[in-house]
Image (cartoon, rainbow, N blue to C red; front, side):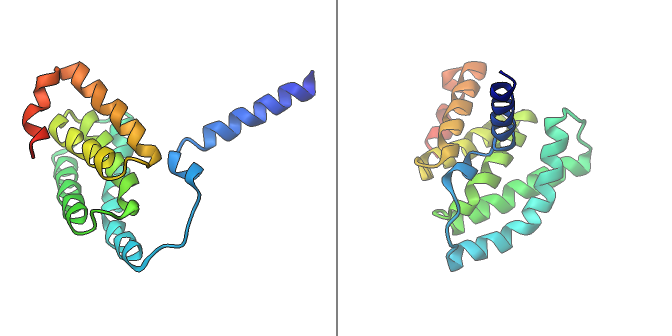
Length: 151
């Protein structure tokens, strides 16, 4: 009985520590383009990570934080245009989309979730992006994003 409980406890810990769907996919050797994307993402992630943490904690954003969020958006849009097929963009794009959703920047959140869903449909993040889009549509109405779909 105690051994069974210990196994269940260990499985729960393993599940909690692997909430990142990309971890299940495994790692493969990165191409030169992916290495370039990684390098270009470093400054984006330096801004995005603390903003995401603050947003997830429902912290108040200063004007500087909002400026940084818009900077992250613009940098990611450039990377999404230049490296549209790089899987290295999936996680930061998803993280930014959640940030935008939390900050009620719904159009940006939709666009970023939609990028993941349409550009990387086989990614573990695509299913989550689809759920997030569904939640946004339930929250704001199906017609709210009618203009965004044509972009």
